[in-house]
Length: 256
Ligand SMILES: Cc1cc2nc3c(=O)[nH]c(=O)nc-3n(C[C@H](O)[C@H](O)[C@H](O)COP(=O)(O)O)c2cc1C
Image 1 (spheres, helix red, strand yellow):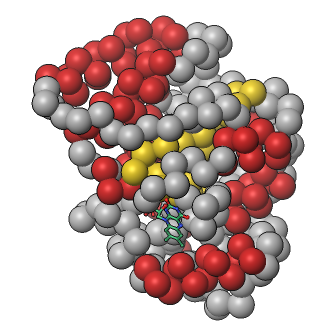
Image 2 (spheres, helix red, strand yellow; image 1 turned 90 degrees about the horizontal axis):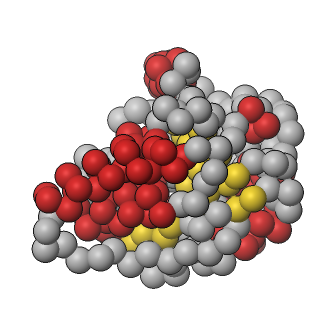
């Protein structure tokens, strides 16, 4: 793998632009840690919320998004890169705006980071879309997610049909919910075998850092190589300082 070439060229350029744009920015709090089957999407959901049947339009958006990125998943350095990310407002409703996300345009903090990664290393960018939509009001989402965690839920996703073995590097992004990964990430790791793949986790949080999730991923995927992750305070999403931190982290990844 030759991501170093990406980091030395694309990232250096992006970083210098970012630094020039925010010379007095603060360093965003970043924590790091260490940490791959084929299957076709859907598993068991533990939620009783009714699935929203509409939104062919949004599904089309996802298909369009995948089509748009298809053929572009190989980086200039020859790596096959996949960027998977989950956020509660990865819904089929393209207009969903979550009160649990700090971005005024409705972009979730995790999505914001995923886009920066995609813009700088290329690859295929795929949101993990839950089969049953999450409540997007904060308190309701907190209660819903807590029950899901307490029940050991394995909420289904519906749009994934990937072959992890077809990728060299898989970035995996998620928010911290109740001190750990959302349960849908467990569904992901139950569904797919990332053996032999390099996983690069990233997350957003409100104080818990990575919450030990990189170690959790390592346990769930013992035959994967799990690299240093990035934890960004969700409230920093959209800030130049946070973008700079993401670019520095990408530049520092020792993938080859
Ligand atoms: C259900 C829920 C539980 C959360 N639990 C934690 C937590 O345990 N620790 C923490 O630091 N932040 C927690 N947060 C804050 C989120 O990690 C943070 O807002 C994150 O940026 C959300 O990502 P998003 O913008 O992509 O939705 C929680 C948020 C929600 C909605």
